[in-house]
Structures are given as C-alpha cells and as structure tokens.
Length: 168
Image (cartoon, rainbow, N blue to C red; front, side):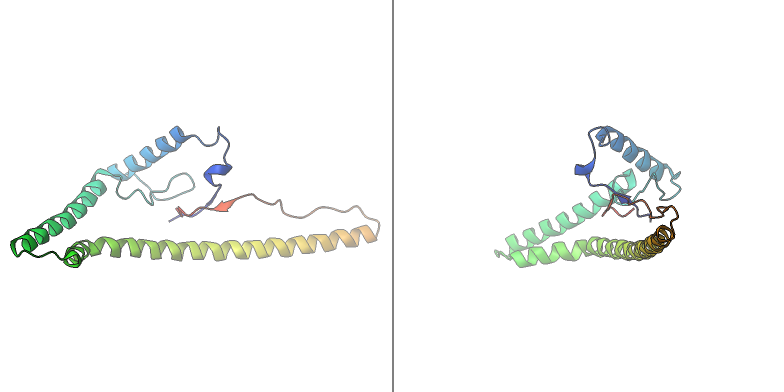
C-alpha cells in the first residue's frame, strides 16, 4: 500500500479537478488489475478501494449480497409457515451469512490504519528534522548577521497539503 498527501477536492481549481481524467485513471487501474498487469501501488496508481470494481470482484460482491438475501428469504418462509414474526431472527441470519464480509472489511481497515500510522510517524520525524534544521539555520543566520555577514535563508519551503483517507 502506498499513502501520499493530496488536497481535498474543494481545494482544487476547476482545471485541476478533472472528473473525466480521474475516471480515466480509475478505469486504467481496474483494467490492469483485471488483466493481471497491475504492478502494485505507486505515486500514479493505487488499487485500494477498487476491489469490487473488477468483474471478479463485482461477482464476488453480488454473490455475498445474494447469499445474505437468500438466508433472509428462507427465514421469512420459515416464519410464515410457523405463523410467527421475529425481526431479530431475520437480522441474525443475515449477519451470520455476511459476517465474513464484515470481518474482511475490518481486516482491511486495520491494515490501512497500521500503514497510515507508520507513514504518519515517518512524516512526523521528517517534520521534526525540518524544524530542527530551520532552528539551526536561523541560528547560523543570526550569528552571521551579528558578525556583519550576509544572512542566508536555509529554512525549508513549507508545503500545502492534507492527508488523504484513501490511503493508497
């Protein structure tokens, strides 16, 4: 998984926020995943979140939904035959038949959270290093100025960004 910083959609200009271009990139990534030519996440492509956009993934998702629906319909038939109404039993059979989906989603979410925490720590270390370098640079500039030498701005250029939850 590859996580990188991106602006929020509201922070893009109309030229930058090109939905057609994003859709094209989305289709290219899904196509590569489907035909087996996807080489992994990088700065330009990320397949995270597109698991059910391939033909195979869409069929799996549809099968999972139908399995849950079938379980509920069978429970409704049983309840009708016995002249009872038990909403909790309907909920139970649906949850029991789709629990593997929730478990997989939880597993992916935990993995994403671990990856994001690693990247956050790495970025915090970089930020602390930049701040330390900026303090050293200010100190050097102040000393040079006090000696009558020309000050040299050694502060790093700030970046404008926010963290993407897409975490790819």
